Length: 91
Ligand code: SF4
Ligand code: SF4
Image 1 (spheres, protein in one colour):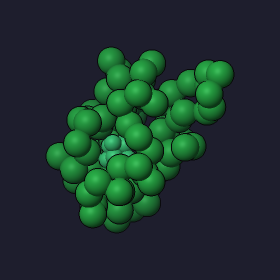
Image 2 (image 1 turned 90 degrees about the horizontal axis):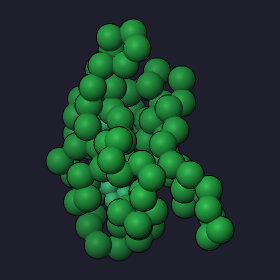
Image 3 (image 1 turned 60 degrees about the vertical axis):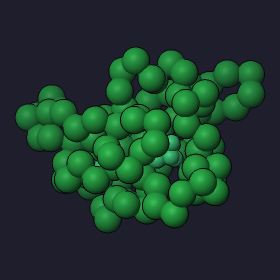
């Protein structure tokens, strides 16, 4: 299942998606994100998966510069640390 967190506004479409079938809850994305976007928590079926923190969802485009912008500042970002390729961004 794709769990998508974000919104569309006048400037674009800003969603971070976690493929909860691929995610194994390894937590590697949690410390690598400089903005603290991710946490790991049980889903509806009790499987531990990555989530976007609830208080960041409605301002995610202000918190996260997107993979390209983030990758300009650090070598390893959420998408590259995730060996399951479970994380995607729309921007
Ligand atoms: S790094 Fe990937 S597999 Fe690990 S918790 Fe994060 S999204 Fe899931
Ligand atoms: S792109 Fe960077 S700031 Fe955005 S969620 Fe991934 S690690 Fe965090």
